[in-house]
Length: 70
Image (cartoon, rainbow, N blue to C red; front, side):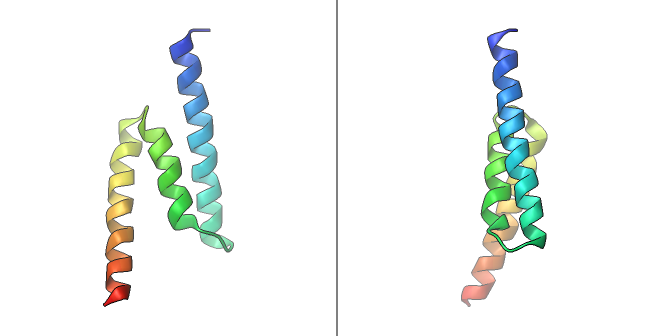
């Protein structure tokens, strides 16, 4: 197997695992607002869709926390 393909598989598994754990943490107690962007950041190193989704989610999280401070 090529090195580049192996890297993509490892990144996909690691990022996907974090993303799934983050989604589960929406339902059960846990820091989903930290885990989901972390998973998307990892996936974003290989996939454009993850990079764009991560930007949108980070904006929403920042907006949410800025409203709570006021």
